[in-house]
Length: 88
Image (cartoon, rainbow, N blue to C red):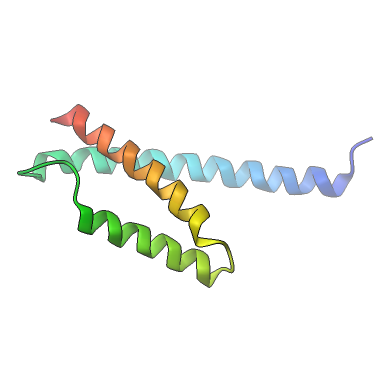
């Protein structure tokens, strides 16, 4: 028999995952729209550093290892660049 506490925590995680997916989709769609404003390449090292720095700071403030959020955001950035390339 399943532990009711485990089931509750998993249900909370599932609800958070649904929100994360929705937010990521919105973010990627917005990132794709950026392509029309960019005169040069799709990547901006300074912007990427800013986004990664903000993610790592947020992780530290919440007591999480910053390298985990950095890895996640590197994947998000790569997806954003792909969305922009589709719009070029």
